[in-house]
Amino acid sequence: MQSITTAIVVVAAGSGTRLGQAAPKAFVGLDEHTILRHCLAGVFAAREAQVVVVAPADRVGEALAEAHEIAGARRDLVSVVAGGATRQQSVRAGLAKLLPTVETVLVHDAARALTPPEVIDRVADVVRETGHGVVPAMPVVDTIKRVEGDAITGVVDRAQLAAAQTPQGFRRDVLVAAYEIAAEEYTDDAALVAAAGHALVRVEGSALAFKITTPADLDRARQLIAPAAPPFRVGVGTDVHAFGGEGSLWLAGLEWPGEQALSGHSDGDAVAHAVVDALLGAAGLGDIGSRFGTARPEFAGAHGEEFLRETVAILAAAGWRPGNVSVQVQTQRPRFAARRAEAAAALSRAVGAPVAVSATTTDGLGFTGRAEGVQALAVAVIVPTTLDG
Ligand code: CTP
Ligand code: MG
Image (tube, rainbow, N blue to C red):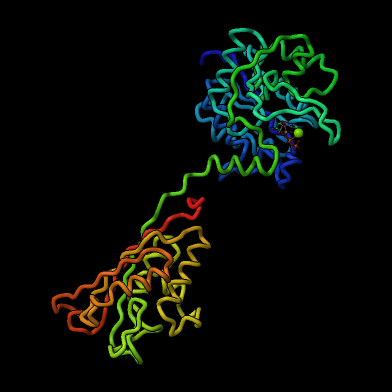
């Protein structure tokens, strides 16, 4: 192995008071992985370097396990040490672990979990080229006011300002010497090195390198890495009911006076029931039996429209709404053509989205052909409500 000349000290020993979570900040989850793990993913995607993680004393083992998981073939380059009461003490603890061959040291906040690897490589390159301390920074976009209490006392020219990020990079000898003589707490490593009389330059930072500090920052980081919602999903549903029920026929959300009724736990509206199953299936939310079975006696004898409205509510609670539905009914009776538009309108009203209805006979074949019952087949498209803005 070629000797390692760069090290990255990742400070992760803070408690995250402002974030206000139960776990120390670096161990709070962004998705199934922690802030520390996401930060290390960036670090290991950058060019090869020694990686020193500085963790809370009681999290050293956990941090090592996280680092090993993501380090892959670079596992031997990882070490973890316990941090101190301040960030400066934590950095100092990390510096004590540098390999003898290291000449360039980057100090990085674990809390800047989404920092792109290019920023890390850029900082290391410029330290090597110039020998100066290097700070990735972003232009300040807000207008900055000078204040005393609530009074505004002046404007600060933002062209003269930049917002500092990490990793900040230094020659090893410069950083270690500056830490040896540091007698007070500095806001960052660059300030500490500047106090020791060394030059600093800035390089371009990244909007993604923001520090997760408050709950709003945590939400933002989580949204940035969340997989994009699928634009739509599709479901299929079928239903069959036999003729032979009491009262009048209900089908496709309409009453059909003079026609023989369908039998069933509800009104036997196979068309509405197929649409319910298509919608529930598209959302992965079960089926009409599991949602409206005997556990919900209020739906005994209910009309299709009520099932549909409740189904739309179930979908909404899971972040979905119907996009459109197409349903086909196979039946010998009643003759649909005259009331097809009316049926589509009734179902569309109940679903809150376009429902197209078509009808066919089966050339006298099968149970529908013998007029023993009806069969319906529905296909539904649903869309995430998050796309509604
Ligand atoms: N840090 C550290 N040791 C400390 C304090 C801070 O290693 N004693 C690390 C944090 O883990 C973080 C980085 O320094 O990655 C930047 O600090 P900050 O954002 O202030 O984190 P916390 O100190 O944990 O948060 P808070 O100030 O809200 O308590
Ligand atoms: Mg802090």
